[in-house]
Image (cartoon, rainbow over all chains, first blue to last red; front, top):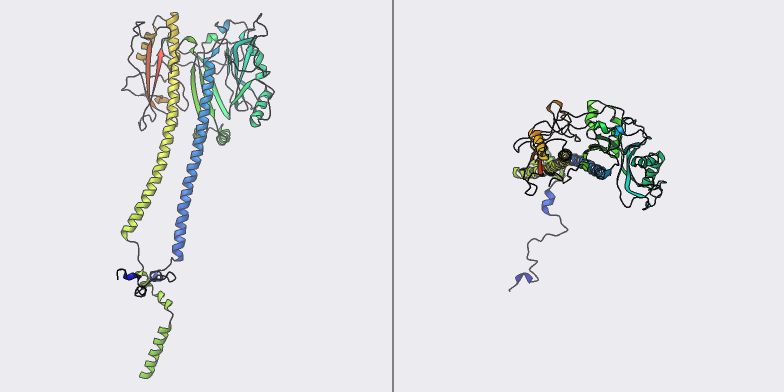
Length: 330
Length: 213
């Protein structure tokens, strides 16, 4: 026969055919694990799993922290670029030495670093100046400025309130072109409104709840919350208005070579000209870092100092004004 | 007597034969020796696999830390380069103004030559997270020299203390104006200071004598 295995008695001739219902003989002789072995294996498993979870947890927290730092870094970079961009377009209407200006006139450039011991309820006018106008800035009443009375300038104010940095932009307008007011007067007219504490509270409330509308209608942006900043400007002493209250201390002078001397640096000043350069330092925090910073802020121990260096994102920027004709190529 | 002994023996045999078979498991030495253990090769292979896995895990962690550090170095170097170039732009504006208004008898390029050739002329700008000192100046140097971006006498080890090279490219006179009105500066920053364990970051800027072309 060609296919003997297809014969009906072929299967019967197979000496042994394992049944699926019958355990294999090899299994019968194999013993199970003892309780000690099981417990040891479980303990080892738990230890390994615990180590892995710890590593995973650390990696996750590092990733979260890194992401938050990147966010703060980007925010700080954007803020410094925004301030620099405003400064590159800044203008004044006077080139005279400020010491010769009568006391009745108002300054066209104001700078003040928020004091470290400032109360959160104080509104600090960090920077105030005028810059070339943007066509779409709204007046304090929330409408576009009247083109017939519009000066081609915007007033720019940076304010600091409740550890938050604000930027206000308001178009400047003359009441009449017959008797145009000096730029300092125009800025001064807006100061009271911008330095109002209630206005800032309303902007913060609108940030938390978009359905609330602030009463002030000008363009205001909350740049950063939980921020500390230092602003310093270098300006020859002859241009600093010493009669103003802002001039309350001797400036610091950096050493430089012959013919390369830098003008003195101020962290509070008022003047009628723009400074030569401005140094800006921003320290931004996330919520967790901010609470730790507040706790350790006045602690001068080595441990606290070491911890403080790892809190938040610190960014500095030097802004040189191109008004003297220097190039701004990249 | 013999009969009684034989009877006892046979009783013992019966008892032995009637014992349940699982009592035999008490014969521990025989049981253990019959079980097959892992061979040395199996153990070695398992350890190799586990070792490789652990190495990969630690390598990944180290790679992550290194990437974070390099990213931080990128950000810091960019900050420093921005501050240095902004300082150069500020001085460039001053030199342009001096040359234009004849405040100094030197021309624009002569002022830059003085700044470039004489040490300790331009103060080093303040940069976040770096040691600051009033005795620190920008060092213009040929390509082979590395300058510290810190004052050795006012060094804080918890700050970032890099080294750098700042040099200008060859100056070319404009064929139209007949004088040099453009300078290109290159800044190399070595983020790890004296260890050089991280690649230098390279930045360029161009300064012009505006109006002098």
